[in-house]
Length: 72
Image 1 (cartoon, rainbow, N blue to C red):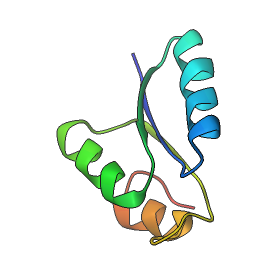
Image 2: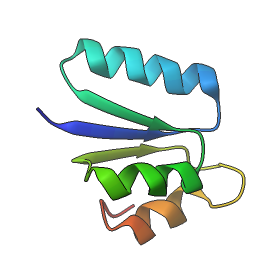
Image 3: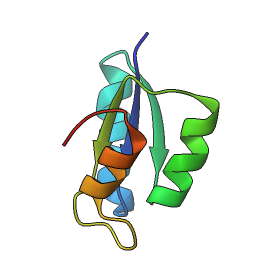
């Protein structure tokens, strides 16, 4: 089963992605910001990262690039 990490500072959007992706058969990790996403990635290496581009703190594009999970 593929694992997807959803990083979004909007709790409603984060939950929507979580529900839709879980229903589609994916394992889903969710984080409200880059700091929590890094913690989540320590224990699991997601197959895909869905990240809000305009988060407070670390921008989504910067996080994607630094994570090495995908290129943005």
